[in-house]
Image (cartoon, rainbow, N blue to C red; front, side, top):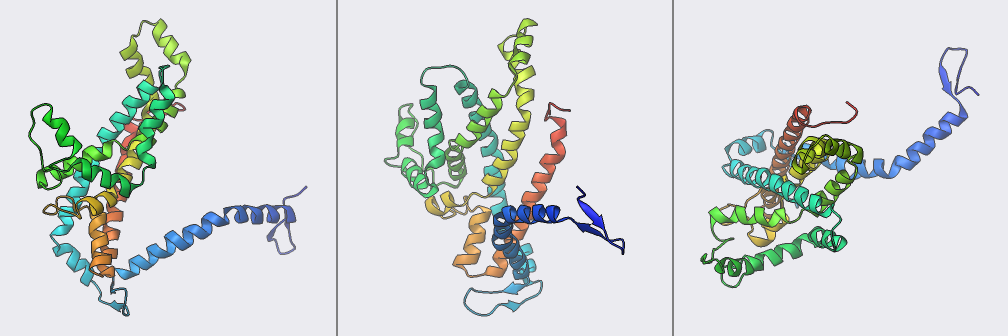
Length: 306
C-alpha cells in the first residue's frame, strides 16, 4: 500500500491512512500542546513585552522603553539577591546529592526495615512547603527550638539562627538538604540497574568493596548523578516559599533570594514590568548554568553505549 501518491503537478499527497495517523498523533499530544501554549509560551511572550512597559496591575500598561533595564543595572539588590541564591544553590545541592547518594547506597542493601526507612526518608518531600517552613521556623527558635536544645547537650550556646545574617543562609541550607527523597529514589533506581556481572567480575579480579564502588558503581551512576545535579540546581535556584514564610528576606536581606525579590517587585510593589525584567535575567542565568553543565558532562559522565 502506498503511503504517498504523486499528482499530475508533481506534488506529493498523503494517503488517508497517513493523514489519519497524523491527526491522531496531534490529538494525543493536544493536552500538552494546549497547556504549553496557554501556560508557558503565551506568558513568556507577554512577560517579554512587559520588559518595555510599566504596569501596576490596575491601570493601563504604558511603554517606557529601556527604563526597566536601566533600573536593573543600578539596583543594588539584584547582585545581592543573585549572590544569596547562588550561595544557597551551590552549597545545598552538592550536600543534598551526597546525602541522598549515601542513603540510597545504604538502603540498597538487604537490611531489616528497609522499606520503613525508605518511606521515612521520602516523607519530607510530600510535606507541603509552607507546613515544612513553619516546622523549621519553630525548630530554629532561639529560645525553645529543638535545634538549640540539641546543641545545648554539647555545651553550645543558643544561636539566633534566623535573626543573624551570618547564620540565616546556613540554616536554610541545613533545612534544604533533608528534602532529598526524590534524589534518593532516583539513585536507588540507578543502583539497581548496575549490572551484577560487572561487580562479580571485579570481585573475582580481587577488587575490594571500595574499588568495586569507585571503579564500577560510581562510573555507572554518573548519568544519574548528572541528572540530579541539573534538576537540583534548577530547583534550588528557585527557592521561594521558605524565605517568604520564615524570614521574608531578612535579616538584612540575607535570605532575599531572586524569586522572592521578583515576587516582591511584582506583587508587593506592583511593578510588573520590572518584575518581568528580573525574571528574564534570572531565566537567562539558569539557562547559562545549565548549558555549562551539559558542556562539561563529557569530562566526567560515563554512558555505557559510548
